[in-house]
Amino acid sequence: MREPDERPRQWARPSASHARGPRRPGWLIAGGLLLVGLVGLLVVWARNILLASSAVVVVVTATPVLSPTVVTQAPTPTPTPVPTRQLDAYISRLSQQQRVGQLLMLAVYTDAYSSALDGPLRQAQVGSVIFFPNHNGGPLMPTTLAGVQRLIRDLKEHATNPLLVATDEEGGGVDRLAPYFGPSPSPAALTATGNPQNAYNQAKLDAQRLREVGINVDFAPLADVDQGGAIDSSRMFGTTPEQVARYAGAFLDGLQQHGIAGTLKHWPGIGAVSANPDFALPTLTHTKTQLNTIDFASFLALLSHHPDLIMVTHVLTPAYDPNNLASLSPTLIDGVLRGQLGYQGVVVSDEMEASSVAQFMRQQGYTDPAQAVGEASVRAILAGEDVIECPLDPHLAQGVITAVTRAVASGRISQARLLQSLRRIISLKVRLGILTLPQS
Image 1: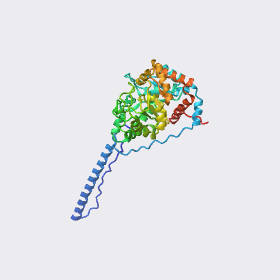
Image 2: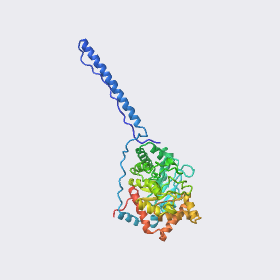
Image 3: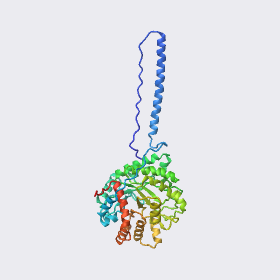
């Protein structure tokens, strides 16, 4: 791990000088001088010991892992609302395809920009991308930091819409920047230090690295409460809502106070599920009381940190909606997350290529994978999601683009519903400084 750009204070040890008084005759005077000299030597000796002790303390406190102390970072201030009039003026100048494209996030796993990306960026006019340096055991692409910077720069230059550029930089087992900067500690390791300031400092360093690459959105931190489920516990910040809120809140502040949009995930909480939604269709079996006091509680506590995004994942939560995945549930998104908890920021889907989505849509009668993921994406938007993370597979990604475009054209996704998401997405882009609204 690359250390923060901080250096320990260097303490200069003052030199000791011994001034002798004027010479006088007499053994008493000589004896007195000898006594004074001995006292002086004792003083210098004691002073040197104290200075040496101070130097040792400086070295110890300068190590990367801080000892438990009071957290010193200031809370993230409430974002200044973007005037609706200016938002609507900007949106009114967008073509219909540009508006639809704002809701779509293209998954990118490639060594360099190619013409294959022109379709989604220039024709579908997607408004966001997510960068993967490796995927499903594939090779590292690009292999160098300069290559990543060039790829992301090219993506931005070829896009019609100003891009949100995301990746999953959690640290530990999900550490997208590790090949380029070295590994970062996991959330559990940060909590184990006993000091939330360490989580803040790590996120500040991550933000610096993300900006250096050209990324402006981090799909982190996890707000899930570790309850012994199937998800790797090292990815979570604690075993109680209070512990998660304290450490994930510090991490979120470290990102957002240094120019990177943070993302709480995975609503409604996967700390107790029996399987990873990427690979299976899990059920969150908690009662409403358990959900509100544990799983939802950490998200609610973290809303005071003003998360830019919240990611919704693909789990069944029968206590609230027995018929839909959480990611497709108006009850859990518009009803609970926005209505009950009061969150009004951007809601982004978990990856739509997940096995849980495919399995659920097969149960709904969809046998064609592209049609299935397209229909799921439309339902996710109708449920309250703003940005859909498209599959990496180009055929499946086109299924999403086609389905959402047709749903808007037919009125199934109404212009009023589309406008809600556009206002949230454009507001985020304005806050990140990647677009400027007209003044009149």
